[in-house]
Length: 290
Image 1: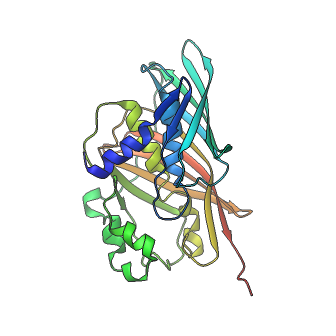
Image 2: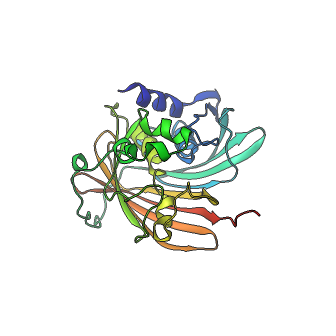
Image 3: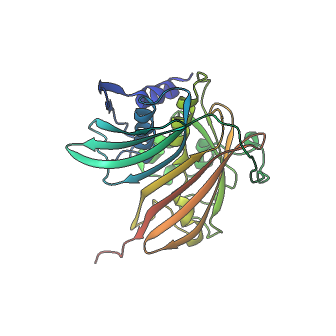
């Protein structure tokens, strides 16, 4: 396991401070507030630690309420709503400085047999043929803000490879609101399904709501743009490993009212649909100040 991946696993593991209370540290990725995937992954990790290991998460619904402060830890308060014969339900509130910054509802199920069908995996080039994020941004590094320039060249816990690379990541040409992203943890991980689930939750927020910006020729770095996650939904359909390649296929069916809706499907390299995702985010362009 690489050192940065080990740091992420530790970040998501949490400290238990009471029966249903957990504390997580915050990671500064350079933009001043906590990365949405971090609080999503930590909240799911807190819920997992109150559920029998034979029950695996099958869905989560989350709301981002306030920006998180990267300089402060986050406390996760787990409410054990229900333990049924087949399903377990948990609610998690993330608290910082006495205020709720995030709310998660998630459901777990014991493994059962049943009917099966799935969408076919779209055709995509193999991940090895797609550029890494570092390669994609290398030719534009001098134009990036300093914090992003440093992050773009730093080691990361996940290897991220976009299938269709924008001609200019800072001033993209308008295009249909769809993209596909190969992702894989940067090292081998233990055979722990819960660990792989909350690591995928962390990674699923990457390049997600920004898909709604593609038709408009702007990025989250464009002057006047305010982009933030409002909610995040995931359904887990089967076992997977995040240390094997996964393809997140994303589209945005609608943007309106300063909000953009995105949805995704996560496939294993051999074509199994293992998770579905959805998110609505704030995509607001402020008028210039005179």
